[in-house]
Length: 373
Ligand SMILES: C[S@@+](CC[C@H](N)C(=O)[O-])C[C@H]1O[C@@H](n2cnc3c(N)ncnc32)[C@H](O)[C@@H]1O
Image 1 (cartoon, protein in one colour):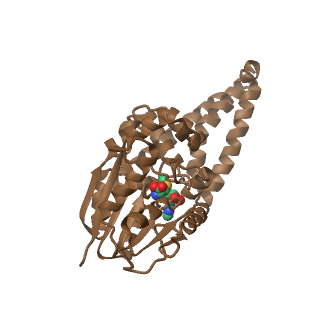
Image 2: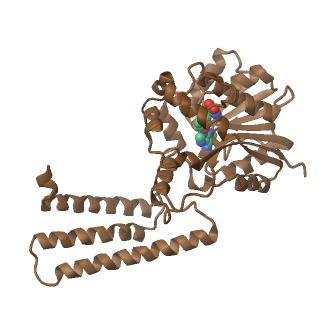
Image 3: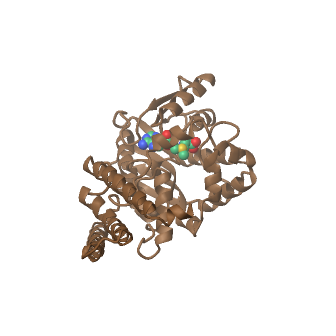
C-alpha cells in the first residue's frame, strides 16, 4: 500500500479522479444543480491538477520547459481562483445574500426518508429535542415542547390550527386531546411520515378533527385567511426558505391570528471561513447534513425583523436554548434507548467533533400576531 501511494500510479489515479470530478461538477453546474458557474468548477480543480501533472512530468523525466510551464499554469490558476473568491466574497458582503455560496443542503424529504420511522421518544413518535425545564426523560421533554408551543399559541376550542412539519402527527394528537381546537390541518413534506401519521390519527379515532396532508410549508395550497393559529415545531430551519414560510403563514392566517415556532438558529452570523476555517467548515457540513438552506442562517434579531416584514406584530423571539440543549446532550449521553432509536445518527451526534460548535446554536420560541390592517 505504502509503495503504491509513493508511486507514479497513485498520481495517475488522483489525476483520473480529478478528471471525473471535473466532468461531474461541470455538468451539475451547467444544469443549475451546483451553486457554482461551470467555469468556476474547472478553476477550483485546475491548480491541484497542474501541480500533479508537473510532479508526474518530473517523475517521467520529461524534458524542456514543460515542468516550469506546468508550475506556472498552477500558479496562474491559483491566483485566478483567489481573485474569483475575493470578488464573490465582496459581492456577498455587499448584498448580505449568503444563499448562493456554501455546501448545498440535503433535501429534508430525503433526510426524513433516510431516518424512516426512527423517532426520539420511546412513547409516541416525537422528533424534537425536548423542553427540559422540568422533564426528566425524553418522552416528558418532547411532550413538554409541544405543550409549550400549544400554550404560547393559546390554542383554544374556537381555533382552526394549521400545523406544518408535523412529523408523525404526535403533536396534533396531543393538542387535540389537551386543547380541543375546532380542527387541525397538518402539512408535511415527507410522504412516509404523512402516511404513518394518518394511520396513528385513525387508530386514535381523531380523523374528523385532524386532517393531515402531504405538502410544503412554503406553498400549503390552503385558502387565504383560513386559520387562527399556525404552528411549526422544530422544522422551520428546513424550509426553503423560512422567510417564504412566514409569508405563507401570514397569507393563511386570519387578521389577529397567531404564529408560534420552536426553531433552531445560529447565535450569530455564520463563522467567517477566512478567520476560522475549521469552525466554518464544521458549521457548513452540519448545516448541509441537517438539511438547512443557507438562506435560513441568521440570528435572533434578524428572525424577528423578518417576521415583522412578513406582516406580523407583537413579535417575540425568546431564546430557550438553556432548557433544550443541555437536557438533550445529557439524554444522548445517558439514555442508551435514545441512542439505539436514533441509529447511526445517534453515534454521529454524540461523536461529531465539537470545536466550539455548541456555542454556535440557539434554540428559540417565537410568537407573532398577524397584523389586522
Ligand atoms: C425535526 S422534524 C419535527 C417533527 C415534529 N414537529 C416533532 O416535533 O416531532 C421536522 C419535520 O419537518 C418536516 N418538513 C421539513 N421540510 C418541510 C417543508 N418544506 N414543508 C413541510 N414539512 C417539512 C419533515 O418532514 C419533518 O416531519
